[in-house]
Structure formats: C-alpha cells, structure tokens
Length: 125
Length: 278
Image 1: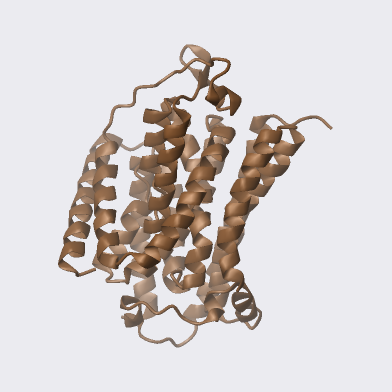
Image 2 (image 1 turned 30 degrees about the vertical axis):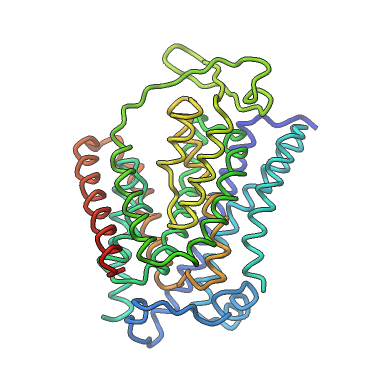
C-alpha cells in the first residue's frame, strides 16, 4: 500500500470533521425544533446553576432520552456527536501515521487519544 | 421571557460574536462567556459550557479552509496537543474548585491580553532545519510557500513552547475558550514557527483541546442543551459567514472597534468578579 502524504492525510481528516459537525448540527437542530413545540418552563433557572439529572449528563442517559424522543436529550446527543468529532480526528491521525510508518507519531497521537478518552469516560458513569 | 425569545436573542448575539470573531481573527468564543454572563445573566458555568461547545464547532467547521491552504503542520499540532489536552483536563478540574469570582477575574485578564495581542505586528520567523536538534528529532519541521518560493522551517525552544501550551490548555479547560491567542504566542513567539503556520495550526488544535475538557463538563452538567444549541449554531453561522465576507470588508477599522469591545468586556468581567456580581 502506498504511503499517504501529510496533505492527503489532512484532507481526509478535514472531510471527516465537516461531516461530524454537519451531523451534530443536524441532530441538535432537530431536537431544538421538537423542544420549541412543547410548552416550557420559565427561563429564569439559567441564572442559577443546577447540574440536572443523569438524563443530560451521562451518555447512556442521553441515549435513553433520545430514543424516547425527549427533545433536550436529542439536542444533547447532537452535542455529544460534536464532542466526538475531534476525537475521531485523532483516531484518523493514529491510522494515518501508522500507514506512513511513523512510529513516533503513532505514539504521540495515541497519548492524545488516551487523554481524550479519559475525559469522555466521565460521561460513562 | 419565553424560551423561544430567549433562544432567538442568544442566537442573534452568537451570530454577531462569531462574525466579528472570524473577521478580526480574535475568535468568537472569547466574547461569548462575558456576553452570556453580563448581558443575559446566565450562570457562568452554563456560559463556559456553551462556549466550549461552540469552540469545537467553529474549529472543526473551519478546518477544511485551513487544510486547503496547506499551511497547518499536522505533526507540530499533534505533538503540542499532548500538552494542551493534559492542560485542559487540569483546567476542567480547577473550574470546579475555583469560585466564579476568580474565574471572572482570570477571564477578564485573558480578554485584555487577547485584545492587545491582536495588534502585534507579525514578523515572520524562519528557523532553518538543523540536524541533531530536539525539533528535528521530533519532526517539528515543514515547508511552506512564501513570496520567495518554497521555504523549509523548523521549530525552536521546544520545551518552553510545550510548557506554554500546557498553560494554554489549562486556560481553555478553565474558561471554556479556544485560547488561540496563547497558542499562537507559543508557536510564533517562543518556537519561532512562521506566523501563518502558527495561526492555522492553532485553529486546527483548538477543537481537540476543547474536546479534552468537554467530557468532564458534560458529566458535571455545565452543558445545558437549550443554551448550548443556540450559542453553537449562532457562532457557527457567524464564523462561516465571517470567513466569506473577510475579503471584502475593511478589517483594520473593524478590528479596532472589536478590540475596544473586548477590552470593555474584560474590565467589566474583572469588576464583576471583584465586587462579587459573578
């Protein structure tokens, strides 16, 4: 297999990023439209912080809510897709550097990936 | 005020922030938190969460444009992301420990710094590649096209730059911003990479840095879907529009006006932090 150049690697990464952002914006906008059709509470609650339930704070909770078509969970699902997009970018880079046989940068990008997964793992409680 | 009116106002403000941020190069994220906290009276934690999400969207959305220019350096970016992501995790932990007053004060200082740094003249550095240096061993080199043809460049003072990047990551995780100004400082001033390479690589790095604190923010409930959606879509629309009109607008005048706005917001944040209004 031919080794991809840096520029080819970057182009494939950029295409993936655009797809991720578009998908995230689409899903959360859909949730937003559903949300606006509901009768809602007053907005004064944003002035005081309230962490809220697991339905919006854990990946499984968000998924459960989205499956049951809860609008705020669908918005949150879109935002999780958005957070996952740069993580997918780093995965792409790990694979790309591996195809270039650049061991040093397979290691460097794997460290970045581990830090990102550590952060995301907080949402899996 | 109903949710629809509130969301619409938030969306409009975010479009303006994204548009001005893209046209002036200061980034839209940096004004979102003060606007939400000072104007909309939103709790600073929700403001930070929404800003962080919008930073991921704009950085990822704009990446295609930078890649087409072929100036960003994927290895320099990835190497420094080790520092920024670790810093961002530390910053996200600090955000829970430090009171909102202090966050507002630190935010104000960063705003003032961003406004000043946007007026620094860009002298292009060009460090030749030398065998045996740390930068060369870490492959922190590249080529780019200048008026004089294709030039090879290398980084310098790698440990110092790496350390400063850790600081940039910490600020990003603490304040929910891209901290592009500090990233450019580390690459352009410390590591002496060419200016264009520094700015485009910085933009490419911002999304990954922000994603490193986003998971922690999400699990703490900082990311409210209603606020984050309006802000994310608004900043995204504004900045995409901003890069389109960039060529036609008279930027220097706009840049001065926006810098004044950023300075005023910075002073207001520091004042609100000291008097305990945030």
